Length: 141
Length: 177
Image (cartoon, rainbow over all chains, first blue to last red; front, side, top):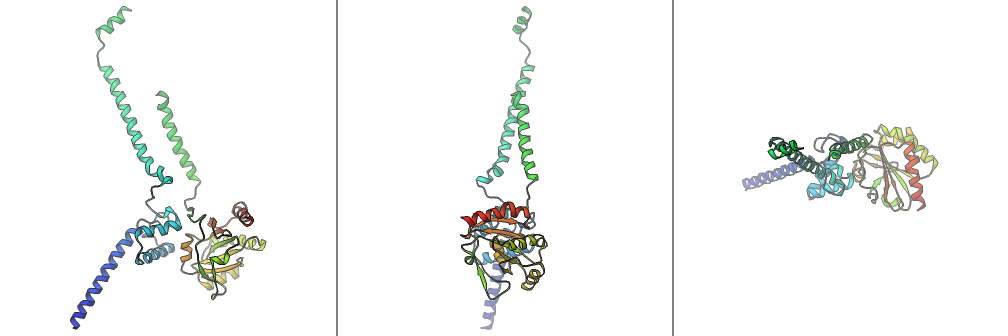
């Protein structure tokens, strides 16, 4: 009887430890993509600022209260704006941020292609020997 | 084509230059608050002077008011404090003081030493109401209208210019409506 109880207890402890660990890794991942507003180049996970501690506490409480990662992000964005997210959302005000680099890449590639083609044409013209007819036409003038 | 060859790189260069130039004069510490134009978060906080009594957001309905977030441990709060004392003397708009993450005794002592410009003071000991208001650095000052909507947020200490040019005109306009 006692052995069975002890085994059950051990099992429960192990299960809750595993759950704790899962929560910790989940929170760590989440805090790594949130910005600390006080020291702006640090994540919430890295920062020792008092506000970061409070926000970590808040995030943990929301998570243990059953909120999903997206809901926790939304909670922080409602208070601090998109700036708390290290990965900015794609929306009308951030289109330039997200798509301008690709636009520049594509236009750069296009410009390069046009230049290469033009240079190839110039070289081809230079290499083909002038025809006899053209030379005669010149001489006849 | 000849024209494009020099004008296009120049145009791109000027655009980049324009962005960088504007960026020189922007303060990265001033994060625009998403709460502007939204109802002030509801709170019920214990008063600084009378711990048994609370103040709630609803108590301030029907008047334009300022919420000044400060703390006795906050250095730049000392800079803006004389302006708040003057504002209280002019009796234009009620200012509620929120002692952010402060000990009650420290807050009371600080007000005794520096003057108490607040209509009422409340204490947010664990900083939760501060988080609801998106506070990330004290001092911060919110302008809240009669319907309880946040209209403006001053990040960092109040300045005479900010008061005269932005906050007081806004307060007067909100009081008329």
